[in-house]
Image (cartoon, rainbow, N blue to C red; front, top):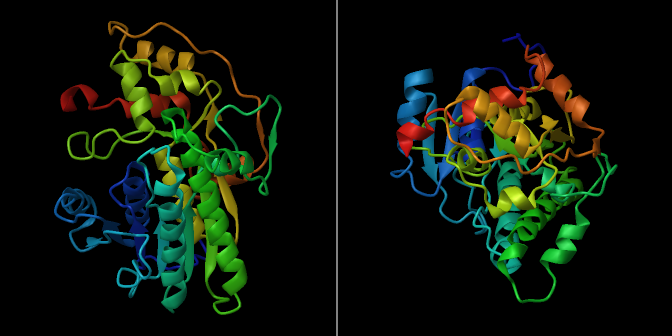
Length: 349
């Protein structure tokens, strides 16, 4: 691990990580702790997620990670108590219900993100704010060939389709999720633009991860959540509608995506940036090839998807350079991420 000069926040500072029980949220907490920071995590139910306190306590000391409850992030002032005394906020909490009704997803996601930022603005000691956005805030699952994505690209198509008239049929669920990420990130940037004169010392960044693979922190307590489940399903012999619907995907390892959140808080020269966490384009056939190599005797589905995405992600190299500043070699590759993704699956199922 490389030593970082000119940190925006010294080691020992406290970072609030919202949604600390999520697949990515837990990794964000882990990476901040590994970098020498203290973490206060928000969850809906502190008793249910008390395992996180035990897990991080064993790794980093019992006083470096604490949990607080935020039951309804969409309520005004939801994070006011949680931010008291912290130095930075990493807002990872979101709505992962995949409900096809936009009214049940988008307003909650937008309000939660803006409420977290409002609370950061209201607490003078908070100096950095980083938002977990999504690659889907910039592009749809199956973009047209040769599309070029820049830092100013937004997924307005998803917003239009998500808010189209009912019926809200199940196949609309992914589009509603994409729109929730698009509109919540836009709302954060708009609030910051309109209010930054009040807090010129508060820096905002966002991270846009694509499909997140990699290890779960605890196979039994944490399980295999979010897009990590896609690899697990293949490992268990199942091809789902999500696999067939996502024809030309990208991935990023959870540890890399989390470390980019740390970059958004720690690097003093990183201000008002959208950080594109696109580790690499891949195919489901390539994932199956990795799984076969990992366990040649395991019965796995046959190949079914070999089309590689040709989208040009212009900001991707900038994000990779941030990982190198931590002493990493760059993006973790697909094999490393996929193999880590299935560790502990058989013991936990």
